[in-house]
Image (cartoon, rainbow, N blue to C red; front, side):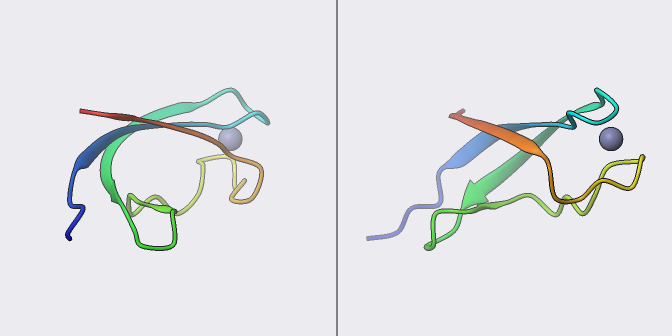
Length: 54
Ligand SMILES: [Zn+2]
């Protein structure tokens, strides 16, 4: 069974308030593959990630 459903992923940075809207898919380990690296403010750990199916 393959799950290549696409998700709309919103990444919010609680440090500077920046918000990113991306598309990605869920990996087998439950994480989301978005290609997002880090926020413009340098924060790459304290990110709030919300995903909803497209
Ligand atoms: Zn930030």
